[in-house]
Length: 127
Length: 232
Image 1 (tube, each protein chain N blue to C red):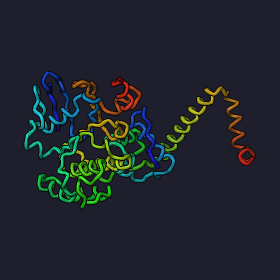
Image 2: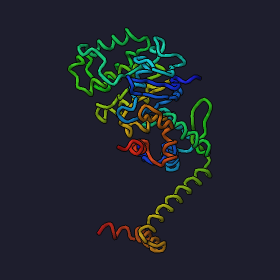
Image 3: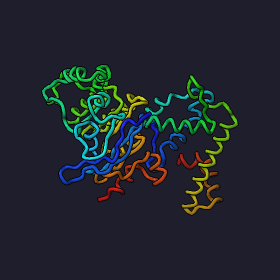
Image 4: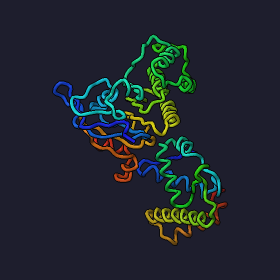
């Protein structure tokens, strides 16, 4: 999957978000070893120092930890993983609601539309 | 560790024209640095000074603590902005030519690059297209195990697919103590690969910052910032 980095925000932040996303969504399993900095940098086509910075920041957040000799691993702290997943979901919801309110659609209308899409999905898409 | 490249009040005059004036900066090891600026801002002059092809009018330029000389040329791998090889030579002859000249030239690395780029080693340089010539030259330059690579407009004539390959090659071959100084106008193509950028404006330093510092501070890419700073 391409990394799709955007132009306006710091690159290391985007790398962090991407790796975080991959961890939460299960591309990397808890306790897995992460690829090396160089391999990740090559894959993302970014400077290795930038990738290094992203990984150090993830280490500080506790999502990955490094083992002196054998590389970096994903945490197997399920509480932390769950918390990050919830935070991320919360973030998506906030930005979605913000966009809906830009369209002039109220909270209750949005909720109604979501219910319809979820519940009546079959009827609507098959028509 | 001492910086790989250091300029102190570096000035170069051509007649009465200041190509570079009072330029002070240093370049750390292990970094990939973009040298950016509009035409005539002094990029090539700076590079030629570092390569020892020009002598400063005033100030100093130092490679690993030494003024450019035979010793610094051993550790600097320089790609000029024009054809610098004998057009009649075949690619395989160029390989042994480079091997003769430079102790740190890796024929194996060069062959690997040439093969990936599907360049026929039996061809004469003059029978290759402009872009392919550039690829050959860059492959030769990047196949030296050097401390500092200085690339003057390395990917200008190369197609986008090969450009990606070349950038990947730079990332693969680059070791953590080596530095790369790369002058280019194709900022958006190489922005993600750079640690920092140096903006030159009429021979003076306009900006020296890391790519992520620029994005944090201005909320825009280096490419967009460049277009604003140097708007005509």
